[in-house]
Image (cartoon, rainbow, N blue to C red):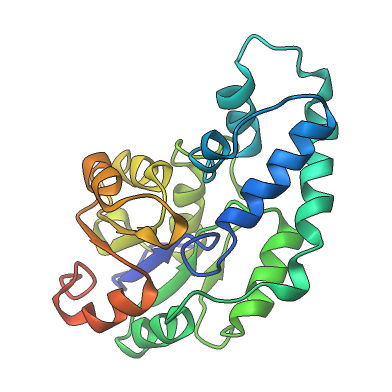
Length: 225
């Protein structure tokens, strides 16, 4: 889509808008355990937000035998899918999307979830009427902390990097945005601390979407041209 002069908000979804971070943690823990990889949940949690390829490199080492990676991913996906019917938006998530749209901003879900997972997350949010664009893992050659999914979100929405902010919950989100000089607002509702998000370069940190919504008028969102 050709770029225009609209401004917008790019938002991560897992752990940012929908309460899934710890579900992914448990699902990866069990998938790894089934393959005799005993990895502490705390280490797994700190890797959530990366793509599965980088997550496995991070947890198991880049020099490992990758023949079992597909089986690990499939096991994670099957375990995580058991939670789909019980997923819930984080406090204020839907209201935040609607408030951004009411300001005339394009609302873009810049998720690297697989297409079927992204569809489940959209059903949970039930806000398609205000969502302009949704990405998926198929749109990115390389996963976060590489910025590919944000590049895809910009291209598909017709937005320019200098006219957007990104909202995410992990240091990997902040790192990806930084590579494009996009201001990133961090949310601690994914389990990453305020200090870690700020230390990674987040321009501001809030507890959850509801807290960002309450401070929207004084946030980086309000500074968009």
